[in-house]
Length: 196
Length: 196
Image 1 (cartoon, rainbow over the protein chains, first blue to last red):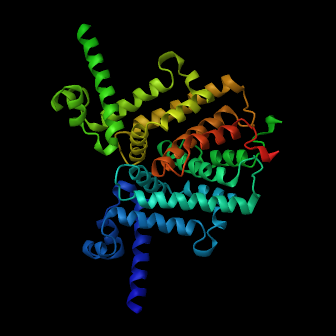
Image 2: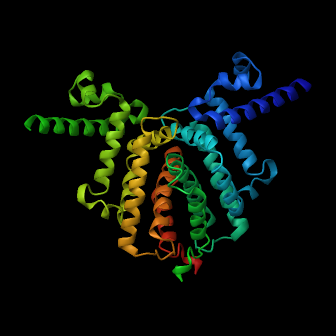
């Protein structure tokens, strides 16, 4: 049991180190060697925990999802619209991890890519959690008239799609502002003073 | 002049062949060798027109944008909401080219990727064209209250983001239906009979 606890602690240390390296060096600059060095392991020692760079990056993304949505028992609450707004604000301050997510998502749609099962499962879960969370918040219809099941995939698409535009041209795309415009639509509210 | 015309014709042939190969074999399965064979060139002959697989694929995507939006002079009209709906319907029937687009977009956000300038320019242009087209269609405010400049990046994000979800799980995500839900929001209309 003590050995297992140490193993899990070491794993958590590696994920934290990987996140730092990603933030500093981006997706392409993140190598297993750089992460091993940061955490004080040989590359061989790191491979014992994560056999490939992809396996390590997917574990980082999984861990991020876990923390972003409040971890463990609070998963449904993690998708409340207010918290999603904070999440998008937060993402706008961490381009490294958003870039890593977006690059891996892009790769995952190609044939037999090792990240494909992760992302397929992730989106199935995200859509279901969002729908549940929206139902808790709004009931069977959002003020705009959409059902929670209609709004889930749209919310997800807006978040992902905006990240690409923002990563490519951060000065031209105000990701948090555009996301708020979408929430205004979703809430069926008015987006500007002149719209009466 | 005749030589140039022949060169352009050959280039167009190569792009058509590449599109066929992409449709049949997907992003990873598309090789310069397979495209050369299809069009009756040696690989060396193909390299004369397109020095890398990426250069060829980006030319295919550029060509697709050109045709999808009506080509040449009709660019603004190409983004009318009605035509975008048809475009999404059409995309749902050609997963190969959508996959190629999505995979390259994912790669393009990594450091110094050769596709980055193409996509950065593309999105700048798409957002501007969409805003112009929405202004032609709706004036300074859409019925939902958004300005054309607010709606442009959102429309783009929804189209791109939905493609990832759909490519990963085509049975779970009805891309054209979700896109129509978004247009309902954008038009400020009602999404379902029970919403009153």
